[in-house]
Length: 362
Image 1 (cartoon, rainbow, N blue to C red):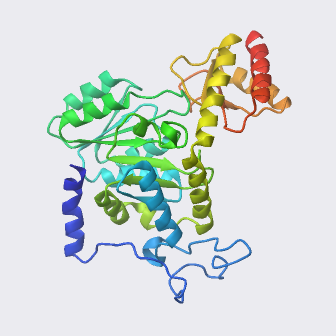
Image 2: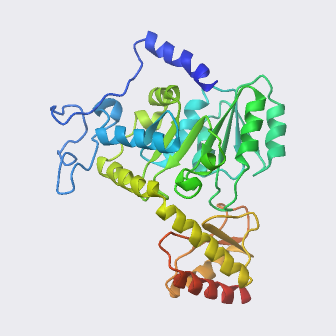
Image 3: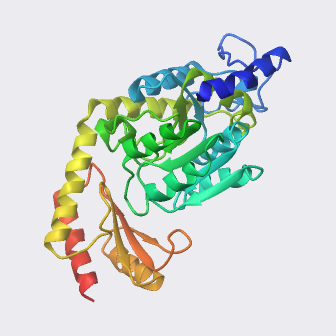
């Protein structure tokens, strides 16, 4: 369905001779196109560090093309495009897709980048539904029969560490008949589903899938994947792709190397074992976490922001860095946000648990 909406846009660009098609950058050509004014991006002891400009002008490097192929294969998607940031990926994709739809529906706890994308799509009807509520989403979709709708959610929410039943969300979207689904898997790729994310483990293929490189992949940038038509549409209509300097070749090489490690499965397995261990010892010691939370993000609700900040400072004095979250990042109160990693030792997790037990007793 999304491809059918896209086709007239691409045909119109083609008829005007405005259709942009990615082309490859070659090292054997003389560069008189990029913004690498001093020649510093072209080579140093670190290798090629910059792309020199928008890939629409300077071309797509082989490493970027290879990364798209590798991620598309890993996530079982047809194609995709690389962004320089997850923020730009979300707001730029939503702004572009808003030209194809009548309405945008967004979860109330979606990331700021999604919220800003909806704001940029302000000429469309944007509705916000209750976090995690299939009833709220279903009621909104039922009231929009016959209209083209974009539904945007995250698969793993980074503050509450909770998730949707993605199969039920997908069923609601498909039942509508003219709705498409965009899922931000920023905190799920590399963590769940053998590293492929919660969509994969739920056997759901959204119309648009967002995967960022700044979380489990340990670098920076992002990938938006789907069909080849979607990739072409974003290439021609997504402002952060058209008007931003392309991702650094050095950064892309890091992502590719880290993706290779992720695909082996060992780090993902260790991460999830550590998350289970830490949550178990917290429960055994009476430290309560948000009840719907799961996975390596461990949120602990506190009375207020002052308490959360004070607790963080005391833990930092013991050389443990954790997050102290306050409004407007969360609706109210204060929260400790602990993130478990694959390389955390049981000893360190036990010590943190003991400190948290004392804090909760204060």
